[in-house]
Image (cartoon, rainbow, N blue to C red):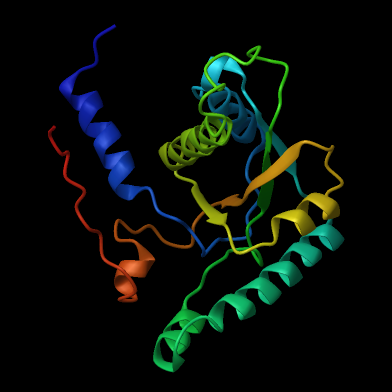
Length: 207
């Protein structure tokens, strides 16, 4: 199958408008749409077709409260790493949408899956984590194409989240995702608007 220039342009626009969303409306997300996103995530590439990602949909309000507490504690600790002026800038950033996001997903990587039979990961075992990252990004783009927003919360203590959600041994915490209808659409990253960090170009070097 060959794609048209118009379809290529659509992909570029989705990439341009994919944002790490932290401001969500509380409206529920239609279950049919969520199932479509789940199926799309299943199409992500993975090393040896191992498909090592596992997803827990966190709905219990007590569990969500524990996640927020974990974030607040880790965020406070992270802030102490910065000098006074930079610390104030850090604390002013909104780094999570945990309060309002209607759908919250904890994503894990199975570190020794039977699936795939070890293909492609003997010399680079980190490809399992990379496979999970690609599945997350596949979901991220698919959500944006459905006019939803997704935000990834990385300021959490992995071991505590694993214990909180009582995951099996061998499941490694990868990401906590907030998903829902964004309060506003923006093609400029919030970290740019806040003056925290601009994009830098990575050249393709020749050897």
